[in-house]
Image (tube, rainbow, N blue to C red; front, side, top):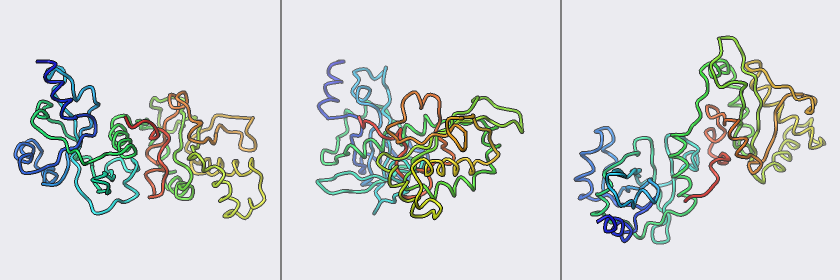
Length: 305
């Protein structure tokens, strides 16, 4: 029986990002399971998209793996860039290839759901709906980010609250190039009111965008028209330092004059696993949440499988 269950699920082609078309028969069992406030998603021609990883989807034992996690996607006429590629934590727009043509869909915080996995034995996968690699990565990363998003100490959030406007202005100026700011705090514990955090920072620039960023500075900042690379980078660092103002203290770095503080500029490909262990992306003021044209954060690049 164990092999039979797995074989049946395999033969139906089930796996992560398999799609199920919502029709009247699906609505009959799905709608009663949904909270009343989100039943509007359960309408014909919307989709159910499996988000559970492949091995769990086809597991032979319904006791060990009773649930399948899904996203309920609704059709939309067109996509907005601000909701693509995980730029917005509560809503995602993405294309699905249907018989060679892009159809557009949206998932949001209300779309996250689960049902009994054994129901897959009686359901049918949509064979002509192809979720391609980039869309698969966006779906996986958007959902994962809702669970793994870093939490900052309340004391840090409170102490930097007055810098929010300056940070937003900084992001809007550099959002075409910079995909995120990563900070290391001297402690991730709470501090007493008025006690500042001592920090280091990495400014992450989308791969291939560092040279265009420097060129843009020469064009837009008259004082930098003939500046060398070091002067341009110092200007970028000073922008971040000034945006945070006196809300934080900085780790000293005498090897980085004239600021002498620990701010680095790195391409996304230069951010390592070691960096991600010690630095957190400044999510409350994320570049990728600000405008439509933001590049994806570095951790959004990876395998879609």
